[in-house]
Image (cartoon, rainbow, N blue to C red; front, side, top):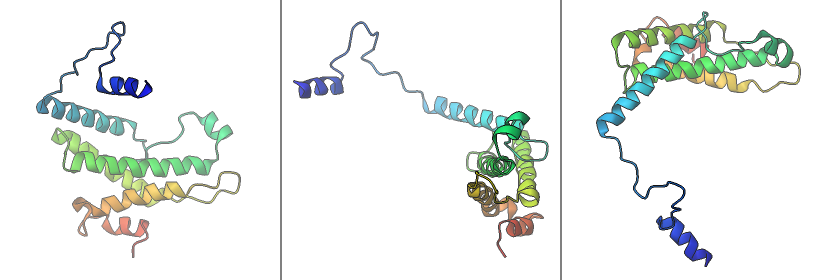
Length: 175
């Protein structure tokens, strides 16, 4: 009997009349509607990253100083900031300069400027130190920061002729 019940549920034959469930699937959006939804979502994500970038060019960090002072080691906060900056740089490079491209030229330029500022942060001030107390796991911050630098190097925009190329290579430990 349980096998029959499973088959009935699986086949969609067992639908409660009280649940309001419909036996017809929802209509699929058209290709154009799907593209527009994707574009809109991408543009909102780009706008969020642009709005949330810190004045120093980084992303992330605790908004509440009490949290930082009482509940977290400063190196942990620095790890979060380096990792978040690397991830944001990767996301913006893909969103504004990748195959999808930003919807308008102004947003693309703002995105690329934000990437430049984020890379400056990773190049100039992204050194992490091993903590002396309980929180010893900050290697992941380096990994995301390093991956952000590596993705920038893989992008044609940051080729050998770009002014940051040598600095990115040096920060990434590439000689």
